[in-house]
Length: 144
Image 1 (tube, helix red, strand yellow):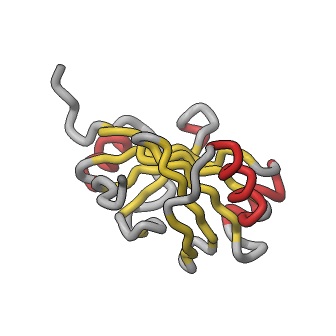
Image 2 (cartoon, helix red, strand yellow):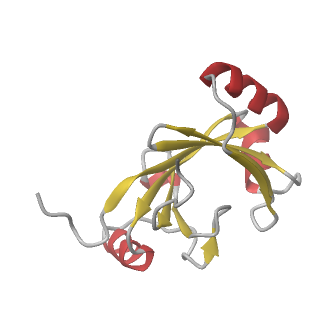
């Protein structure tokens, strides 16, 4: 089976928006029976983050650090829950060209870097059955 140019490679992570990162980390630590692999903050996206490695997929917990951040607005409007699905791709530029050609609205141009320092872009949820889809270039070298 050949893959199309700019095709998805694998699910990189699932991101859950939370109101209180410390409480969510404690809850998921007890639920999953593992400690988070790392925690950090991204000033550009205005989030604090904790990442659990669950097999080949990461679970990312996100808390907004300002009332105007995307994650804070999401939690205030919808409550805590699944925020986005992130798909790893080999070449972000090629993927964005392909999805735009297919008629999908890209809400970030790929000029952003995600909390891990890799290039990212998002496809609007209206074009993906209500799910915000993030594309991230490359593969996470920190996986265990």
